[in-house]
Image 1 (cartoon, rainbow, N blue to C red):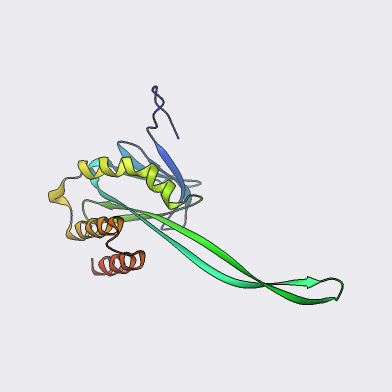
Image 2: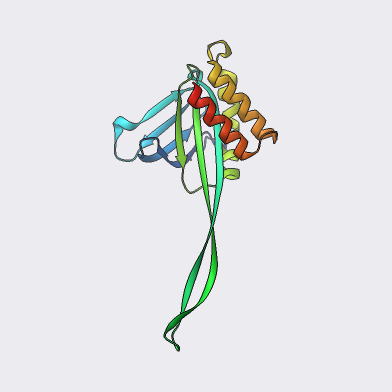
Length: 170
């Protein structure tokens, strides 16, 4: 993360992977969003401010439970079973272009609240800079679904289902 002379953040970055599974950094700045792949310059991508119609954050938490067995050394047998719960958070960012195309990135080592807090200032800037008349109907519908989801009108499952149907349709 870089700071300007006044101490305000002008960029924010996240450890991420692109749709091809390449690891790198997704960097948000006031003028562009860029993905810098770790070991491949050809995988780097830049999304200019006027080309980005919307930024959509998708987050889900997967819970699972399994039993773990503990060996009792004195009895030399497995005797106790304890339930072990795990929660895995999956965070994704979709960059929707004004031509309707999109790029998706899976974010690593961050939670949804922190991610949204850091990206929120950039979302408004990029939405305001996008020429609305060039935005495809799919991108407009995705943006509308996102707004419904953020307002609480759609649950996580409803949003994911509607988004998948829309992307399959487009």
